[in-house]
Length: 608
Image 1 (tube, rainbow, N blue to C red):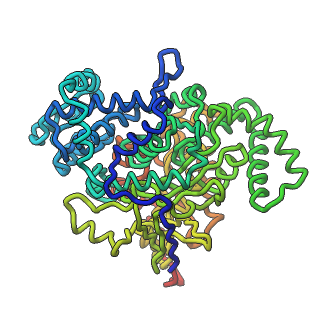
Image 2 (cartoon, rainbow, N blue to C red):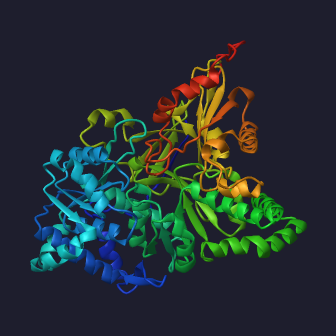
């Protein structure tokens, strides 16, 4: 059993709460830009640390004047924008607790979270959000107050609080100590009923202070980032709080269709993203080059970039490779980096494996993608690659103050300053995942001799074929999903004679690919799912994945579905992870069809 524990590098302060991170930042430099707001002309207007603090205090006074008490829970539905962090800190200053709800949540999901969390108020961003809440308002009578951002209620709250003194706010913000509840974040429910994760003030304070040291190069003076993944998720929420502590400037762009223009104008130094974003950047660039008759040049440039990065890891870059790299840097890499704003040096990636090829490609482009690993229960990051030593293909070592070990069955266990205080009103579920001070993640992985973690799969998702072969779906799904025309992949085959897969097409990339391959770009998903060229391309992607595993683990059959998996269809979580149980249930007849008439397995092996 391998175990690596990294000592904390910052002395813990059990009396500190999350508001201290902002107060300390203002004391260091009140005039430094902490946020930037988009302007009508496509530019950005800075918001200083001092101005942000002033707005936070004004809104906190409004909460207090409206009757919010210390410990009250407030539901919050809002997309990724400046006001998210403003409301977050204002609630803390007023002694309250935010309960984030995804902006895509259904009325029944909203009802469950409000009811289970015992929220007494809710803030909604849009009229559409309010209409969804209004459907179930009668069933959550304890929610006594509703604020609607689109009606200007945040400004009205701030105006309402003028009678509250600074001393009253200061008294209220100091009530919470490190062990107190800071937020309730509900799991996506991909494996059952959502559970409220109790994250404490110490989880955020100690992890922020220690992570800032471990990631000092990323968060160096002048650092900035453009957030576009949902702040309701712990990943972006933690980075928002970490940025306040470290003084990194944050901008927001929730509309991914406007992401490239926003990157071009904001010019961040680091990004926070999931692997799918990097796949999209790469695939769209490749297809754009293909459309311009430069597809071969792009693919050759990509091969050289990967070889160059691998040579750097090996310790020496041959002269010929250096020459090719310099050429493609001018022709390809520099232009691609410019499209991302031109200043991005680092990116932090999580939620799924990035893939070696993409890691090497972006590294040669001058962008180090630092893969990390964590869950809601670990306040996001438990491990992250270091700038001084990062290993492509791993999720890095444990952060300071965190320990990681691998159980006998391969499960990853985590302990330390980031581990949650349990599930809200669910002692049985808490007991199930805790082994003393160690949290059982449910994920499988390995640790190398330097303590760098590699994720190999999810314990509950392991498929055992009729022949007794253990198959980790992620090892097959991730490389297939990197193909430009593929949206999602779900590997199946538990207790079946062989492994199969359900595959959906990417409706955004498909028309470009079809056009580049001499086909009608307006082809429907249904027609594309049966088209020989599309079938051949999907088979090619499957072959690439199969080449990485044994024959017993390889995909023998696949079905291309004439639909997409979306959050709205109930098949994806808000962070775009597949709901495996829901998909296999909804498409059970399709799955069974792939095994109809399949031969009985012979020579059954009981070996995993």
